[in-house]
Image (tube, rainbow, N blue to C red; front, side):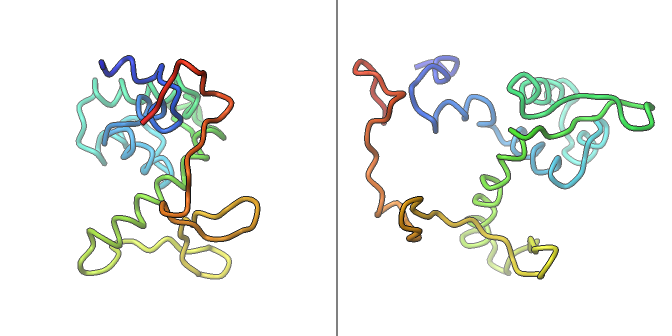
Length: 154
């Protein structure tokens, strides 16, 4: 299967990968949440080529994750997260939790603290009916309304 065809699969894990399935896009999003908004600031932070950065930013705009608008002072344009973009934050924190557990032998390089109480933020998977915390061993995938009889997922 070709990469372009992945977006047509009836799978809510596969489809988003077409949007942000490379490291640059996820790193751009990480910097967006850290307050970076200008093209040159993204380029300086990431060391990415202008064309690749422009491509990734345009893809995020196309999918409604970022919006490009004049800065408050009008001196330049900036990239801002939309509501759809802000909804990606738990994904980045889940990646961070995994990285802290399995790839940070000296401990977390950054701690993400709750501004009001200084507790640390973590992502937890819970059942929406009973509130039980879940792992992959507790979940059974079942066909949903978006899956047609002729489709299949892995």
